[in-house]
Length: 217
Image (tube, rainbow, N blue to C red):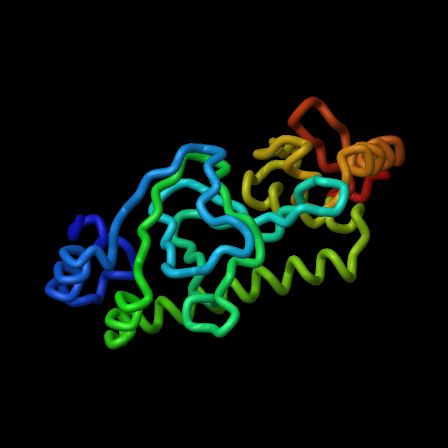
């Protein structure tokens, strides 16, 4: 496990003896979770910081009508709970569950305190906190400042840049996409149909042709 940790940016500059001690004392331990497993339930206390070793998770809240609203996504290298661990309000504000089979490193509060004595870990820790905050700010802006169409266009543009094509493939289901934007599936489908009718996109199952890139429609 030491070699695995040293390959991760978080621990690359941490002293081996420190890691060995924390592992022996079970201050750092690894656990696997299946797709669909809930790792942390809303309103439970945060006792550990998680580092996503592999897989993908989401934090979601339930709307009054029972649908899910995905607020944040965690991928390999992301941290979970760091903003709660040392705070007075240390309960998870949302449910966190796996959208893929995942492996997490759980680090206790005392373990984090020990690791924070090392400059290399501190810099990785601060950078990850900053990235989480920026991601949350983008989500807040999405909810409060932009229409569903604008958010969809931004999402498709990001996929186009990532996949390097105007024919993008959705990597999530339409339900997951609706949850991500905090809307009901019928609302998403109606907006996609409007965009198609107006010549902004073409739809073929999970493939979307982005026509507005070329000024069409």
